[in-house]
Every structure is written in structure tokens, then in C-alpha cells.
Image (cartoon, rainbow, N blue to C red; front, top):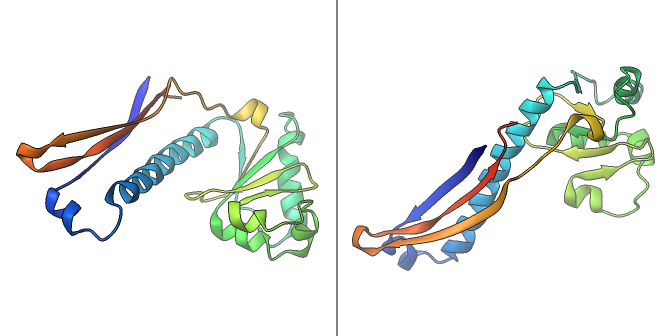
Amino acid sequence: DQEFGVQVTWTRAHLEDATWDVMGEQNEGAGYAMKKYIVAKMVTDLLANGTKAGAVDVTDWTEIVAFLGSVDIALMGPADYCLVSPADYWTLLGLDQFVNSLYAGTDEVMRTGIAKTMTGVTFLKVEGMTHPVVLNSMKAIGLVSRRPLTIEPFLYPDQNKYGFICSLSAPAH
């Protein structure tokens, strides 16, 4: 088991001088840092455990479809997710074939970074991706947490130190 966390601190002067909600801003930043760390760890584990990753030309629909099919052809079952970098995600949204494969006629794909397509594959915009990764989630990924995210505030006025610790516990792999 492994602990993941971040400690955020500030001084009384910072709290008094700030023209914004310090705790709210720090909570958002801590959440973002935790997400970034966990996603990076997940992507590293994915790349080491039987998924398909490759330098795919995301401007070539034929190459994308072949890449999506590579998981099924490798006898891992059909792909249901494709993780791509933000740059690749926005490139895909410029392809007519990709846009035509979207069955949701809303702006959800722009707002959320999640594009469910008629190919049966959901494309996810994931920061930190260097190459697209395609996978069958029933065989390639599992995220188990032993203890959910916990935020513990602390106050040490004698040291002029205020803040919180944001942490969770999960298996190492």
C-alpha cells in the first residue's frame, strides 16, 4: 500500500492579504496535483501492462481505426477506451470522420474531454500522454483505493503555519 498526498501551507499574512478564497483556491490546486500524479502513475502502469500504445497519425482516420482494432486483433477483446493528449484530442475533433462518429449531439466533447463514438471506443483527453493508448478496460486497467481522498486541516499559530494535508491510500499497482 502506498500513500499519495500533498501538503499545502500558508501564513496568516497571506490569508489576510489575499483577495480570493485561499482555502478554495488551495483545495482546487491540491486536487489538480493529486489528479496529475495519479493519472501519470496510471499511464505508466498501463504502458507496462499489455495495452497498445503507438505513434499514431491522428490526422489519418484509416490509421486510427486500425489502431483501435489492434487490441481486438491481439486477442485482448475489443477496445473501449483510447487515451490521447489534449493536442491529439483537438486534432481528432478537426477530422470529419471522427466528428461523424460521435453519437452525442451536444457540446459535451468540448466541455468534458470525453468523446463517445459509434466505433464503441470512448476517447479521453488525458494530460501527460505522449502517445495514444488504446485498451480494453475489462482487461487492462483497475483502480482500487483503500482509503478515499481525505483533507485534514491544521493550524500552528505559534509557527504562523496554516493549511491542510490532502491524501489517499491505494495499492502500489
